[in-house]
Image (cartoon, rainbow, N blue to C red; front, side, top):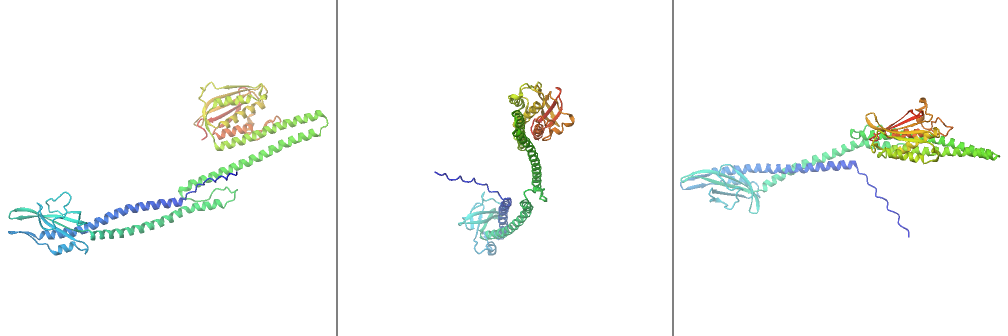
Length: 477
């Protein structure tokens, strides 16, 4: 039974910055338009009410002025012009009621709704909306103090009309204002879109520049972007600069590796050819021994080249973690002493001034083990068989940063002061004849640099070389 091929993973669709900006601006414009529309609706309603309330108030005053006392009672003469002014709209209906403060209706519709809070004496007009005759109407209530033979009394006038004309005026004001707002919003969106396109134009130019380049073209981007993306362009240029540096280092390293491997393999091939040409078994055995030694050197060179590449790669990725340095040193020493060729070597680990568990730092444990292994191997390879090696651990500082110092003193031949800078370079060895590859100390130096530390060579109190590897406690900067 053949299983169907697995479905490809869904690829996230990249979002559009232009679309996001446009959607955000449109949402902002719509929210602003809603707020302004609410304000415009309120303004239109208030404007319509104020206009028609003036008519209501004027008509109420005209009617109240025609109410007068007589010996026979009150005369209420409602002028028709007052009612005509209130009912300017043909569809509107007009209602009125004249009554005493006690509630007795003198004329008009007795069932008109009263204002909230009831009727109070006074000559100031009170405007209110209330439902009447299945429609919402606008009323004014105003009083007049009449001196009658029986004494003073307040005569109240309630005048109102339906809201058809008011609502029509409100809608007219609102629609005309809203049309202006919509026009302004549309115009603003157009200019906003043009502004976004103009702002995004430099990014399109940068994209075209990068797409049109050859794979080997790592020159910095020559663009004048907006301030908001200037940091991005700077980061891209810095990244390309690091790529160029990494590429140059890789090319140099590959060239050096090719030369060293070619030389080592050529020497191995030469020894094998000389062995094949020998007729005497003793000389053939000598040549084969030399070929075996050369093969061992080649294997060691290959391992150190791989180690150097690994340390360099891990230095770029910085896979750091918090570790205790003392157990790492002890483990590295134990692994080193397991090899048969280390028999007779005396190694001591000194850390009297550091309590147990206090040698903590942020570092790459794999790279540090590789550095320690190369330091031990370098001392053992270039010293006598009974060489003494003292490994110390102490506190120090790198500039203003707290650091730990791994020191290694040996009783070997040491390195002349004039050669100490050179031996940190790749493939520089003081003992080519003894099998030195010139990579060990360069690996340690690479580990120090990748951790923001430093490597120093000096004279040992044991008579040989002293190596100090300083590492910041808080990890690479």
